[in-house]
Figure 1: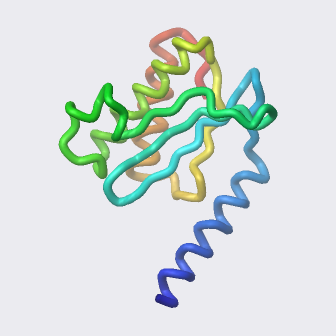
Figure 2 (figure 1 turned 180 degrees about the vertical axis):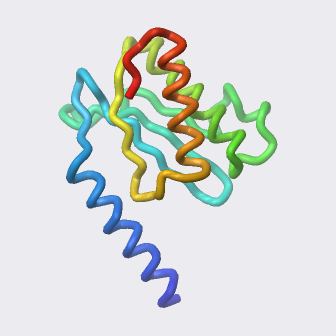
Length: 127
């Protein structure tokens, strides 16, 4: 249990460090990523109004049936595209990426690059 507590403590510490530098506004909200072993989640948050503007995950009805397991890179790519599409539908053209204390590698990187690509295809600023 001690090792698990230590890992959780270090993760919270890294997330606080990232959040000191990254903040979302109405013009450029924050794209926050969270992951578990089975799923990956993405939210677009306006920190000034403290509201979630857009959310997508491997549990979203739009993609739940298309993906087998939610804990792989292909699922993260699909979630990244979905969250970017929803942003564009809501008129959000640019976001700030918050990796949430996770290293920019694997599923987190795949989600970010897929969202960036989707924004670029639509001619939006992205991040």
